[in-house]
Structure formats: structure tokens, C-alpha cells
Length: 401
Image (cartoon, rainbow, N blue to C red):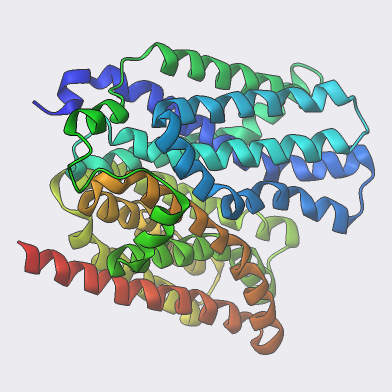
């Protein structure tokens, strides 16, 4: 009997709630303008608000892997939820018009979110067979996407119904606290007990350390998939930047209307993560990978020949659906191959999320040098690595069968 059957679906539900909390990091986009207006911040200062979340993916992902090995994955997730609750208290505690509570809150949101993204997928492995991990992670990403889609609604309700947009923070704080309580009461096997029961003479039993995390990069498969996530996140952020720019400069769409372009991308991504949860139950991620990337390459290449904004956004939707599960497939393949190294793998791959901070400046440089077509070439460059990686993973899966 699998761990998932022993624990039941009830063990998965609080983890899915954890993925919803993971989506809280997306609050930074909708509230930047609110904070900028309230605190009279200039563009440069306000631009550092998103950085307060992003920087932690690079800095504390590996320490999170070590922490998970020391205190257990479930306890690491509880720590992340506690940090998130603390973050949601700061904006109201600091009072209106003062910028430091927002910067401190976003820093704590980033810390909590990094720990959550590194520990929660590994915790899923405690109740899910390795072959189904990609499906479960995809389901979690779908729940996370729902949270991102609802964030503007929560802000609107807090502002129009409750009279203060900042009340969205305590709303999220209550949801994070409720998720922590639910997880705390859930019966989830402790992976440390499994390790202790196998004994210290088992060569696969190792303690998670910084050294063990970096040593895993000597495995060509893990290294290739970690770089794959770097480019996957860079591609994701790249679409968000490139879509409105392309609409504005190529199709002369009004600036405000162009800003709504990424909505098409995120709708496609949300639908695709839901489909991925079902797809990966029947088909291994390695076999789906090249088909998804191939379709995405065709959709992005079609940007060069689109006759109008409708055709362009149609291609954006196809590209979004095709690329949405790249992160899930990379992590799922790695965890399936080395389930005993889940702490190290998730830590390394969450650190690779820092790719989202690298691609936007490259996009800006490419646009300066080659105009709007430069944006497309950068996206295709990210996809080129994914294409090679996907073919290698597909061949590797066929050879092992």
C-alpha cells in the first residue's frame, strides 16, 4: 500500500492549501502602485519592492534544504507559514504612509515563500509515490495560480467593501494561520523516521548539508534540470515583460490595453496546470516534455508573422498552455529519479527561480538593439535550451524502459 493510500486524500488537502499560500507572493504586483501612491515613492524606490521577494530565492533556498533535513519537511513548511503570518501583520502595524513596513513585509513574504517553495514539494513526496509527484505538483501549481488570479479581487474587496485596501494583508494572514493549523493537525509521515528505520548503513541515507546540495550538481541529470528551471522561470517572466511591449510597439495598442495582455498568458497557464495534474497521472513527464516545448517554439516563432493583436494573443495563449508545466516536469523528473534526495533537489531548483531576475534586463538590452523582434529572439533562446533538454529526457526515458 502506498503512502498516499495510507494517509488518504486528507493528507494532501492541507498541502494544497499550502500551495494557495505560496501564491501570496504575487500580491506584490497589484499593490506596488498602491504603495507608491500612498507613500509618495519615486519609480526607482518602488521598483525595489519586487526585489524584496525575489532575492531570497537565491539566498536561502539551500539553507532551507538543510533546515528540512534537520527539523523535517512538515516543520519547515510550518516555519514558512509562521513567517508569512508575521509578514502580513507589518503593513497595518506600521501605519499608513510609511514605506518601511511594506519593505519589511515583502522581505518576510519572500523568505516565507522561498522556504515554502523548497519544502512543500518535498513534503508531497512523503505521501505521494515518485511516479505521481509531477501530477501532484502540477495540481499545486494550479491552486497557486488560482490565488494569483484572486489577489486583485481580494484587494478590490478590501478597498471597496472594507474601506481600506491594506486589509488584504490580515485576510491573507488569517488564511496562512488557518493553513498552518490544518497542516499541524494532519497525519503526515515524517521522512526522518523512515531514514532512521533504514539505518545508517544504508548508502542512500545521507544527511542534508550544503555540501550534499552542491554535490548533487555533479549529477548531469540534476544539473541539466536545474538549469532548465532557471530558463523556465526566465521564460515565464520574459513573457510577462514582452507581451505588453509587443502589443504597444508592434500593434500600436493603447498602453492601458496592452497592460492587460499578460492576462491571456496567465489564463492559459492556469488551465494548463489543471490539465497537467490529470495528464501526468497517465503519461510520464519525460514523454510529454518535447511535445510541449515543440508546440511552444512554434507558437513563439509565429509572433514574427502575426497579422494583428488577436492573432498575436492567440499565439500567446498556445505558448502559455505549452510551457506552463515546464517547471513541474523538470522537478518531477528529478524527484522521480532521486526521491531520497528530495530536500537537496527542491532546494537547488527553487534557487534556480532566480532566473526570473536575469531575463528582464536581457530583454531590455535585446529590445534596445533589435526592437520588438529582439524580445522574441530572447524567448526563443530560452526555449532552445528547453528543447534540447526535453529531447534528452525523452531519450533517457525510452532507454530506461
